[in-house]
Length: 297
Image (cartoon, rainbow, N blue to C red; front, side):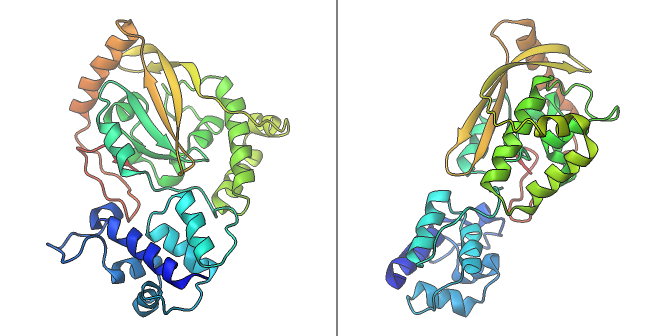
């Protein structure tokens, strides 16, 4: 364990965070940049005295549980997490589960694409963030409980009362089963992934058949038909971009320029913004958002 290097690393990562980034009130000017030590300790569920000793290079060797808690509290990337464990003299091992923390730069990007429907999903395809056009085109994710924002669950357990215009297409099933198998292998101890696979195996004949094929597939571009109850049928390009260090994906839905689908998207942007008068989200406690901003689940 390199106590001095660990102390320096923890301090540098604490000082780069703002209270707003972790859902804490700003409470006026601060003498030093970043979070206070007691705030990091509270986010990591450890004592303030213990965290202070770590930053002063006087603390005992932190356990894997404490290191994982600091990884979440300080919003570390996968590379930073690996470095944290190495400084503490611990083997890294696989992450416990997919990260739900969407980078601020990606949230800002969502708001800069008014003509593109965009969502951010994690490794198991939970929708974590979206912009206004995605909510108008697909569905109001803010109205759903967190567990129901999973696109793979929605596809395989779809009902007549589900989103009528989702238009994922039959080929989404093969991709979803293969993608979920990759996630299950990457996060073997994550209970949410285990429960999702078990639920789908029990409740969906289609998923059970595809799961038995041992598919391992990825998909980064396709044409996606979407039928919307207001603007009708659209043919959209679906591009999936990887967000580095988070094991997350940015899904972009766009239309061919000057096509009827592009005109429908532009109309939907106006209609959607006018009709979205109540968008109250069930946010993660550490990530409050406002209606006017791209939404983070």
